[in-house]
Length: 288
Length: 277
Image (tube, rainbow over all chains, first blue to last red; front, side, top):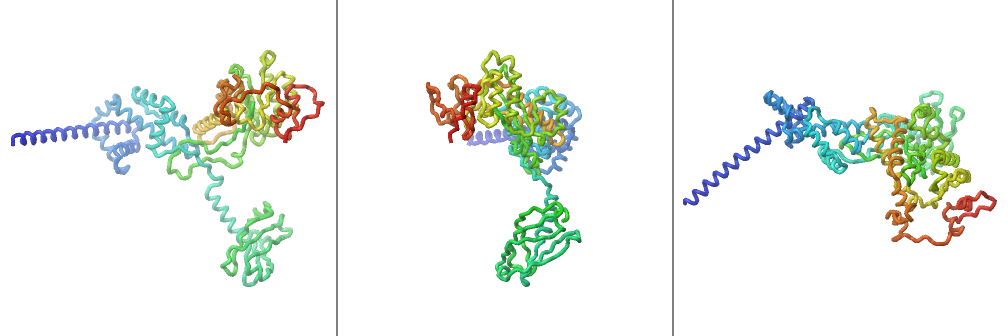
């Protein structure tokens, strides 16, 4: 019984010690987090966004940016002024290095985004040069030297950039070439093409006639004429190659091959203009 | 000596991109992507002579408009930029290049044996080129047709790094510019810097050794041996090659005067031997 009692006491003592140590670890890590967050806030030119971003990434929490911003404000307000002054003048080396590294990578990420928007994919040397330029002011010399040492060789630069890409969701890739026309112009051109060229020819199955309606804004060019097609050809939905001459109104004759595409519709079935043998003159296109 | 084309607007350069940006891309119209200039480059196994070798960029007026002339003329770094009717190398351009080369090497040529390695392109094999070289005491060595990927030191080791350096400098310059665009003048400066760093500042002795030009092919690179499927270097025959073997060195159906090319004989009275085909 005595032995059991002694064992129970030992277990209770050990549990108490463990609880105490866990509590101290929590307090220590909380203190470190506070120091780092406030250093990021100070070195980030008192930008709440950067400090909140740091807090979010450091705690891996599911908190929103607004909540993180509020937390940073709370931290800053609750900190004593003399402690804040001491922190900014003589920051603890570990916290200073981590905070500075975050500020650098944050600024680098934003620079990278700007470059991408400009249509440039920066390479290793550009990124490293920019990282060294975006070092926060008021940073202790020790941390600066340590950071420069990290980016000393090509190999270590690549390692640091690999971590940077993982952290900020970037990748090594080839920048695509943008299409020559902006989207709205492309849409406009395609709309015009469908509205004009593909509506140019109408087919009337019932009458066995092909009616050509030239839809143009210029009233001088607006006319319709028709051609009779044999019933067999109309039935088979194939039209032989033929030549349309628009006379003196047009500079170049238009030769088109027509193939019936919409076989299920009846009157006014649309034919597709698949190939233009003679390119349209500029007059023709300008008239659209 | 060899030529390579330089794209005025290189695209699809590898770099760092942020994920999830939908509309990012390089603005590069098709006509700009198709524009090229020609770099006429020469390297030397002796690093001392590197600064005397002309590294010329040849462009036509469509690629480099004449309004650039004044700007280029005022910039001493861009002196070796030639405007021609075409960016392709012609015999006329080649003769002008040889004359510039010989002028720059005027203090060396009388005392040293200088041989210029050339590929067997049509402009290089022109009679006028040979004549210019003969007058200026410059020996021309023709690399057999269609073997330049294995025998030309520039093609083997230099042009690739030159293009890479150019891309690197181009990206850096575009990073620093406000809109990400590059003026033609800035592009020319980039080309000039790349030329300087790769062709002039670097020593190319090992490139000649690896290409088998120096050290009796003892230091030839494994890449060359692999390209020729040789496990060990083939021994050079003791006898001189026959005229038909020599003809094999030149492109097919090209009526080159082999006698003149080999011996620098002035006479062209003999009928040129038809090449093998």
